Image (tube, rainbow, N blue to C red):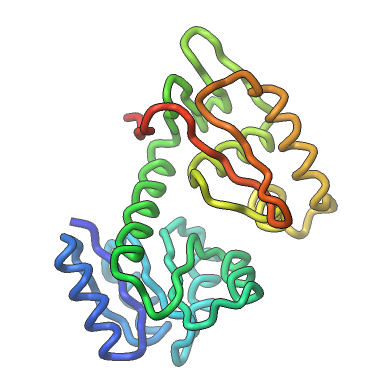
Amino acid sequence: MFKILVAEDDANTNRLFCAILRRAGYEPISAFDGEEALNKLDHYQIDLLLCDVMMPKLDGFALTRTIRESGSLLPILMVTARALPEDKHHGFLVGTDDYITKPVDKEEMLLRIKALLRRAHIVDERKITVGDAVLDYDARTVRRGHESVSLPPKEFELLYKLLAYPDRTFTRLQLLDEIWGLDSETDERTVTVHINRLRTRFFDWPEFEIQTVRGLGYRAVRKGDDYVEED
């Protein structure tokens, strides 16, 4: 049973989230501020963090940053009453995996949690299968039947990131931070160059496509069979 840490300072909301998760077959663990959440992370094997932005002692942004600075890849779903783009951008830059806004739709929350847990499994397995194509993180290759394409590290990491989150749009800034780091001397044009190289390499592969979302960034669309994680 997956353990989900619910970090939410409002007692009624915390209780509601835990009830929804329990009915869905998860084991919820409550925390009512950021410091308590860190303490629970030290004492329990947590599979996912459901985290409110506005909390006492340590808010959701600071909590997420602390977790990421420790090297943890724990899936984090941030809950916020503020849907402003700058708030979401800040959340992604400190390391959250996904956002959901209040009032929370129960089904949407459960679907996002399921997707993040699936993504965590992909990280553990280090392989993604899309139709006949297999991305092998350790080998930095994309295989299809007897065909194998070896990619430069940044190109592979970019493709792996996009295909691990199918249909999710990433801004160029998000991808730059994730793959190169904001402290690097590269700029957002580097992302565009690498996207174009990937499109050229895989233009005739039917399994996936990298699409431009005008004014926002890029997303990968899986066009093959339903994907599975490989053992």
